[in-house]
Figure 1: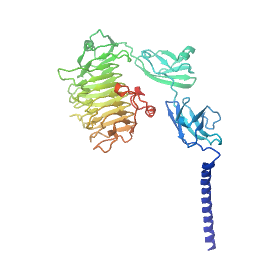
Figure 2 (figure 1 turned 45 degrees about the horizontal axis):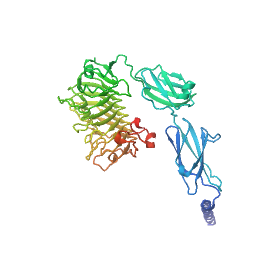
Figure 3 (figure 1 turned 30 degrees about the horizontal axis):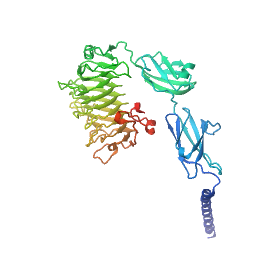
Figure 4 (figure 1 turned 180 degrees about the vertical axis):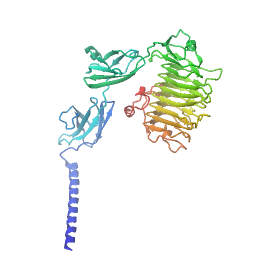
Length: 522
């Protein structure tokens, strides 16, 4: 019995001691709050990397605190060497501090108030990305066999390395001062990456594709008859159009051969007013760096149903491409395929701005019905006020093709969609009914539309990643019947510069950092 009471007594004593200790800790904090001699350490400290090498710092401001000291140490968690010190007031938060690239910074913040001892440090780390001091290219910088590269003048830089080929250009003192250098020895129509160095430290990175080296291409001038040039060209020919206005020769061009039409200069796109009907034999067809105007175009034969129309039962088509173009004021579809048992390997739209296309609601925007398409790829492009009252991508279950082991794949990547498929009764971005289908939508910004992705049982649930919506609530509205929503999506205002004027430059820093939408607007 005595042993039992002794044990109980010990337990009670320990609990009492713990309780007193807790009360003393609480009272100490309370007394500090009432008459402390030292400032409290900042809490809620966050560090976000913005624009590659700028860190945005924020923390919770305590009433009465106004002044802070921020110290940065580069690749040095013990703060043996202070890289930078910044004095901050509460009303300056959040602050952004420019740092060097590819460095892990230890960052500490303390509160400073006259009459009180400085607070203890609050510490956080942040790792910057590769520095980017390359400036945007201007018209004429990228040629077929050389490139002019620009960076912030008087920056500490020593050499440029261009790959593939490890082409090294040593920067002269004059080039360093001006921030301009020309790298030669390149090949036309080739994708390159240029890295700017100071010694071994990278200070900039730029991807570019060299312009066309005409070579065996056929140069077309505004004084030529464009339609005749197209008709006379051999299968597989590349017609290279000088800048200028070609709309004097307008109409519907029927093709039974592979051909490429492209502008000579990507920054000065030739203005063309043609629609194209592709028949058997037109295996590969490309439109590159053109300004394609559909204003007033009609087809008396009623064969053309948009910018590009596939015809020919059982015809086999290869790759069809629209790249680097401006497409506008086309009354019907961007592409239309209703040729029975015909097959298309791929249809791709990239680096293109499309405006006021499919405005008469007589078809869908990308419209494959009896014609099978294996891959639809839509990337790095902007779609402005297109397909009002109709669907964006439509792929039907073509008789004799669907259910035979074929699959249609749709990819929408890094695009900006504004007022697309907008109507009171929700239209669909993905109206895909081919029996075997798969869709991916990622890094895309959709705004100002009542559209949904799909409400079709035959459309396989799309895969979504890093998509943003503004004024487009239906994409995430599970109350709409049969609606297949993007549960991972984010609603946020992109802060467009002037959408009514076609300027979709975004000011929302989070979207910029996350690389959302058409890259040209970031």
